[in-house]
Amino acid sequence: MSESRTVTRSMLHAFLAALIRSKPGLAGAVILTIFVLAALLAPVLGLPDPVKGDLLARLKPPTISLSGFGAHPLGTDQLGRDILSRIIYGGRVTLMIAALSVLTGGVFGVVIGLISGFFGGWVDRVLMRVVDMQLSVPLTILALLIIASLGPALHNLVMVLALTSWVQYARVVRGQVLAVKSREYIQSARAIAAHPLRIIFHHVLPNVMTPAIVVLTLELARIILLEAGLSFLGLGIQPPDAAWGRMLAEGRTFMSTAWWLSVFPGVAIMLTVLSVNLLGDWLRDYFDPHLEG
Amino acid sequence: MPNYLLTRIGESLLAIWGVVTIVFVVTRVLGDPAVLLLPIGSPAAALAELRSQLGLDQPILTQYVHFLGQAVRGDFGNSYQYMRPAMSVVLERMPATLMLAGSAIIIGIVLGGIAGLLAAIKRNTFVEYIVMFLALIGQATPMFWLGIVMIMFFAVNLGWLPTGGYGSFSNLVLPAMTLGTFVAASVTRLFRSSILDVLREEHVRTARAKGLRPKTIYVWHIGRNALIPVVTMVAILTAELLGGSAVAETVFSWPGVGRLIVQSIETQDFPVVQAAVCLVTTIFVFINLLVDIGYSLLDPRIRSHGGGHE
Image (tube, rainbow over all chains, first blue to last red; front, side, top):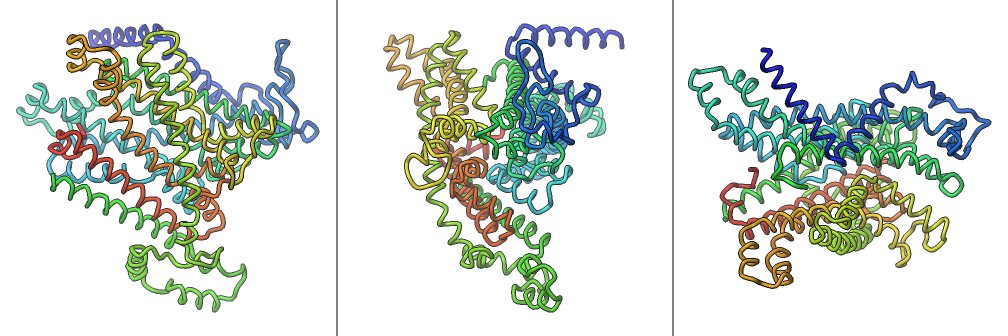
């Protein structure tokens, strides 16, 4: 037991050492950590209320400068709400939706991929046909339609976003299962008539986790952008909750007089997606040096 | 080969049927057009009459079969808002979407092609880092935000171009640049990595060893092979853009199919939504089919593997 713990620890060390050596990967990890921490700690950061505004301080320009942050570092919106606070609270909403969707789609996709790869035969053929079909359908438009009719509640958003995502995991995991299925340790587990579930969970699953995690990061970036787009079109989480896409859509009206309303939420989306992509690219290279993106 | 072709065509038809079914379920089962069509507080008798007029009092299965039959003929009924066939409303918006998608793809390929080639040739230099950084930024930027910033800068501050609308060349520039940047970012990254992949292959080494001129090698041995994945991606992006970029078209008030879908969802004009989504899906599925067939002609391995999932 202690030996395997040492192995795990030294693998973790190697992983972190490689991450620190890679400038883009490290930059991605640091930016993402800052965003996640800010989102998690939002209530204890002493920020102004993101929903209730100060009507006397409407559309104030950013006060951040070399001499300090000022009262409203990134300015206020048309209702006098602090933009920085709304971006941080909006990050809570955006990141939570993205994380839930990616996990839901991920679990579903991994299970389908495992079943498809492990059992093969007609099960595999049927599942892969479904995957092929789903890949040839315009999912963005379909997501738009489904959200519009079901209503933009949190669970609907998560379900639809997960629906656009599971296929990627299923394909990658299936490929990986096929690659490890013929390995000796799995053959021997089969030979001693181990239960299929035991084989899947103990011997196959650990092998498909790394590619699944790589897909997860890349999907996270895509889903954040898609969610922002939906929320821009008014199909995201509803006001007064802040969501980045919605903030942008609202700020558009004041574009010519108050640029900070639409610029800062956009920067927040861009930085988050950029950091996730940097991390995802690095993870892919780390786990599989043959692939390059 | 004929087997593969038949399977792919069958799959495509199934995919279209699946989407048509989802559209039916989503718009018919969940929403009641009669309630939407009549003013609020209309008598129950009027609602019942309209329902039987629209065939909504029939069993759901009968309605579904009827809907399928009409969908095959492209007949989705009259638009509630425009009072004429929904499909003709959608088709009228197609030229605008085609124009925007076409311009964006051209900008994307030219810009992305040059940038990707540059990054691959100038491997591990400052040039590569700058190009790849810009491409990463381009991929991470939400399209609607880029659009808003472009409007702010070129239309509001500099006053060079209109903020939106349709009709002249100047209306096209900003939306095409916005969508084009997005396409260019993906093309750049894929083209670069695909060139680098081909560079490692044997026939390129052989060509080098034979002492062929670098230019010949780049054009004939690398360029041609590296283009295959790019062509696939561009075809898929085209399919996506032909569906109308709902977001970009909304930002620039561009009267394309994407914006029509968003507007019709807002006004609950279900016949138009159904017609638009079904048309867009058919185009999308068709382009995907063409890509797969083209691919299987180029690469015989795919045929035997039945779709290339390895």
